[in-house]
Amino acid sequence: MIDNLVLGFSTAFTPENLLWCFIGVLLGTVIGLMPGLGSTTGVAILIPLTLTLEPVTALIMLAGIYYGAQYGGTITSVLISTPGEAASVVTTLDGYQMAKNGKAGSALAISAIGSFVAAIISLALLMWLAPPLADLALNFGPVQNLAIMILGLVIVVSFAGGSLSRGLMMAAAGLLISTVGVATGFSDARFTFGSINLLSGIPFIEVMIGLFAVGEVLHQIRRGADAPIRTRFRDMVISRGELKRSAGPILRGSGIGFVLGILPGAGSTLASFMAYGIEKRVSPRKAMFGKGAIEGVAAPESANNAAANANFVPTLALGIPGGGTTAVLLGAFTVYGLQPGPRLFETQPTLIWGLLVSFFIGNVMLLVLNLPLAPVFAQMLRIPYGYLYPIILLTSFVGAYSVSNNMFSVVLVLIFGVVGWVMKELDLPMAPLVLGLVLGPLFEKALVQTSAIGQGSFLVLLQSPISVGILLFAVLLMVGPKLAARFAVRRGPRGSATAGPGSDAAEAREHERDEAGR
Image (tube, rainbow, N blue to C red):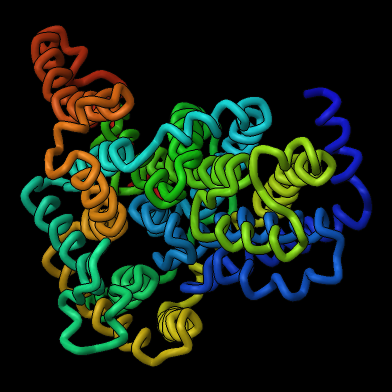
């Protein structure tokens, strides 16, 4: 391991590789800022520009674009509730509320810190555990993936807000939207109404832009926009107390993101949603989630970055892409005459370890770039909303059109923008709908394959120790809070469960005092 790290540092620390690593993370941040573009499209567009470079230099740059875009998507999620990346959707739930409360700088800073810590943890695990984790990933077939999807649907309960029925209703709506298009494993088209544009389903990016960006603009115009934030510059800087509250969520999010990242197909989006849901269940500040809890930013952002790095486990060790962007990077490997797989670590150690070490260097660059700039980015909120809204709408429509070069994408954004506005007016939760839309295709694919393996019987789920363990964890998530609540009620007369310094009521009072102070 030490020899490999020395080899990696000697490769990555050449002036040329450092320069292209910096260019990659800078371009990635800019690409992440653009709604609809995303790391997958950005990497695909820029591959031709790297053909004149050495393979290791080209891959270092492309990888920098990948994890740089993760943070770039966070900036617009926090400032204008417009996710630049699919994995940044869940960050809008608390990040945007923090921005409206004058804490945009804190939200952006904890995103940078959480992403950096998650990158260091996941890279250490990646270098140490890549071969055995690759073997573990091979044991995850359709049965185990179905158990993971069931666990993801259970997490929907955490996004239901004050009404479980509304949350489940919106999750069902998301699953229904995901069924549009050709059925998995069959050739039948569903709910396309004769439109060839719907054969491949309703694209997630267009739905995301419409619901969050256009829907928020319409909602603000309808109710009358608030005055621009006039908070002091020092209020934009993260405090020691916020760092302390974020330590646990960052560590938990890093672990969740890494575990899900090594599973082919799970991706950063599911990891960020699951980290948020679990954090909401274990946090002593549950009442603050959705109102500007910094834990609701730290956990998903850490999971997002950890999953992005862990995606390289199946990609490098098995030749199986861990997500959409790593699938494009897998194509880049073949362009450079490389074949990812178990033997790649033996035949190309200089390239592999140089690439892995560059992840660490790139994340240091991102931290140095973005942490000091967090309060500066937050100054965007001082712009009068009359000027800001046209910019948001323009970038949303341009981003949607750039996805497919088709006006149909723009029409979809408008339709789901109206849907998002109606949902905000009726106070319906968006996160369950988005999670249902994300999990729908994955759930259906695993369901069909598991049914085929079990010859129509789903009892095959109980024949795998891995799937049984995952299902037991899902049951624990459902019944655990109820058991904890009963235990808290029994302790109530002592006052420890109702009025302690970490209770929901105390946190709410603290939040009100902060608001009054500002």
